[in-house]
Picture 1 (cartoon, helix red, strand yellow):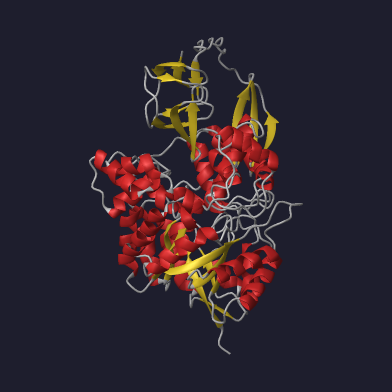
Picture 2 (spheres, one colour):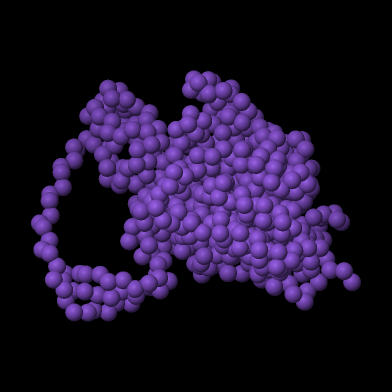
Length: 604
C-alpha cells in the first residue's frame, strides 16, 4: 500500500528566521539557500508575513514586498508561498480597520503570495470573519487557524479538546471561506496526547477531504512527539525547518522528522535525506556569520509554565540585548506565569504573547501590577476581542484606571473603523506631508510600521543585524557585553574580586567557582558623586529609544498630559507630565537611545 502523502511546509525563511534571529536576516544573505531548497524538491514555503514583515523595515532597511517578489522569482510560479496573518491585526501589532485588512490581502496577493494562514490569538471567531473573507476575495487560499497551547498547571477553562471543538464549530458555522485548517501551537506547549485527541476530533468534525495541518515549535521539547501524534490522528500537513534554524525555539528539523517517520506509513513531501543534507549545508554557509543566540538552540523546561512562543522569545531577548538588560530575562519569563493566569487565557502567540511579555517585564522591573502595559491592558478590557475566559477582575480594574478606558464588548474591527488614524485617507495625507508617493504599498508600510515605516520610505532607516566578526557596510555588530553573554554562556573565565582571582566555569548558565592565588590589582578610585537631578525632571523608567515627541519646550501642560512616547521591548510607553506646569526642557530627540534613569524632559 502506498504511503500517505504529507504536505511539508518549509518554515525556514519566515518562522525559522523569526524564532532564531528575531527575523533579522538580510535577503542577499539567504537567497542562495532558497535556490538550494528548490533544488532539494521543496515546493511549499512560508516566506513572509507575521513579524517578518515589520522586522525588514525595523531592523534590515529592506522592503518586505521587494523580498517577496524576489523570493517568488527564485522558486517559480508553481510553488505554494505562504504568509502568516493575525486576523484583524494582519501583520500589525494593533488592530486594523476594514480598509487596512482589505489592503493587506490585496498587497500580499500582488506580491507573490499563494496562501495566507490566518489566526486570532484569542480564538475570537469574529476577528476571523472579515479578514478571511477578504483573503478569499483577492484570490488567495485561506488557511483558517485554531490557536493552541497548554495552560500553566492548575489553570482550567480553556485550551482543552472541548475548547478547540467549540472554536472549530464556530468557524465552520460562521461561513468563513477556507481552503485548509491549521492547529497552531506557537509555544509548543501542547501535550502529544492533547494533540492526538484534538486532531481526531477535528477529522471527525470537518467535511471529508478537508486539509488539516499542525504547526508547533520545539521550545518545550515535545514537537516531534506532537507531530507523530498528529500524523497518527489523520493530519495532512506539518511544518518543518532546516538547520541551523531548526529545533530549539523553531520547528523540528526536516532531517529529524524524516528519521522519526522511518518505518511508518507516511511520505513527508517526497523529500529525500541526501538532498536535504545538501540544502542544509548551503543554508549553514549562508548564515555562518550570524550571531546565534544561545537561547535559540535550547529547550526550556519553564515554557509549559510560562508559554512563550519561539518566534517571540528570541525577538524579546534580542531587544533585551539591545537595551543591556538580558540579565533580567529569567525573572521576566517566570513572571509570565501569573500574567497568563490572570489575562483570560488568550493563546501565547503574537500579539498576545507580546502583551504577556510586556506585562511580565513591567511586573519584574516595577513590581506586580504597578504599571499596566497598554497592549495587555487593552486586551483584558476587550479592545482586541473576547478572551477565552474572563480576565482577573482586579487586573481589569487596575487596567481601566491606568489606561483611562472602560471595558468594551464591541467588535475589535468596529473599534478600529472609528479610529481616523487607521484609515487610508489618514495615511495618504501623512505620506503627502512627508513628500512620499502614496502608493498602495507605501500606505500599508506606513500604516503598519508608523514612524519607522516613514523613516524607511524617506531613506532614513538603519540596519541592526548581529553578525560575528568586524562591522561591514551591510551589518551593524553590537558589542556583546560580558553580562549578557554570561546568562546562557559556556566556557571558563577568570575574574578578580577584591584582589582575589577566581576561575569560573560556566555550563548552560550555571557557574562553578574556584579561587586561585591572589593577584595584585590597581587601587580603586573613590566613587564620584552622582550629579544632582532637577527635582522637576522626568526620567526614563526603562532603557529604550525615543519614538515620538508630543510636547515642545514652552508648552503648558496638565498633569497626565503626554510629553513624548518611548519605545522599549516593542512597547510604546507614554511619558506624561507628573504635574501641571510649563515644559522648560526636552533633553532627547526622536530615535535617541536612552538609559533607565536618564532625564527626558523638565516640567516646572
